[in-house]
Image 1 (cartoon, rainbow, N blue to C red):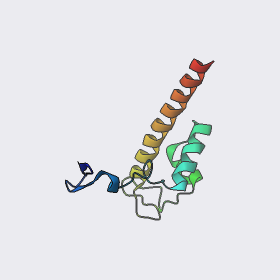
Image 2 (cartoon, rainbow, N blue to C red):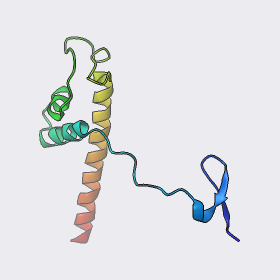
Image 3 (cartoon, rainbow, N blue to C red):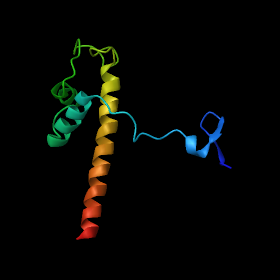
Image 4 (spheres, rainbow, N blue to C red):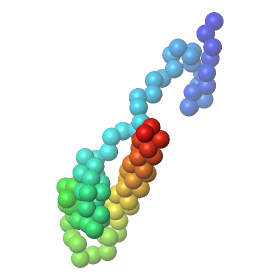
Length: 105
């Protein structure tokens, strides 16, 4: 017979009927991708400038980051945190790629 596996919701289903994994997460906002690229290309760029270069539009710049909102109602501080996370991840990936290429040569 078919083997049974436990799924993420603790229900049983046959192994052949197991849900398929569709790849690494959902794609993020293209504006964030552009902001990451802008910051990597020009490290002197401020986080706010990188976000604006990426296409984000913030309502006011003269208030604390926790009160400035973008067009989707996300605070500037949240966008800066996300940009910093993405920058760390991108730099790590670039470093690992460089190390792999170094090992190959």
